[in-house]
Image 1: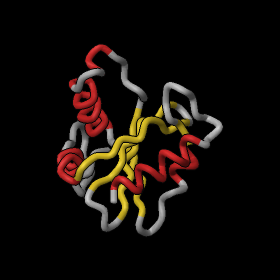
Image 2: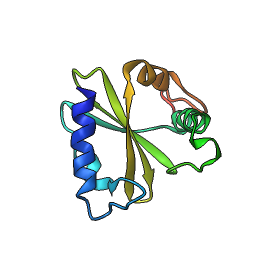
Image 3: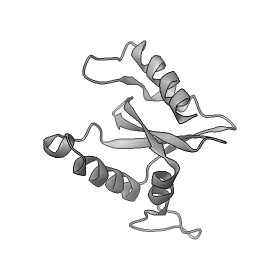
Image 4: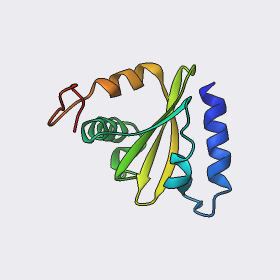
Length: 122
């Protein structure tokens, strides 16, 4: 099912005017508009972004590369076994990458910095 979501998002990004040959990007507002009762678009907290940044930079062939964005979004759909990570660059969301359920669980457990009364990162 993650494959279908990734394919649909890839098609949406590929036909976007913000698409460039070296990356798949779409307007951030367009991606956020995908959110509904069953599709959740969540910005990563600073701690989660740092977790994602470390994971991304540790994987070949990106060891010598730069990060593809200054933030990231997690997209989840109820009933799916995984989700998508999109890097954010200003007003763009780029390079969708499918992630499995176990990765999402680890990402959601990552907390740094100040927490609110419910234990959520500020």
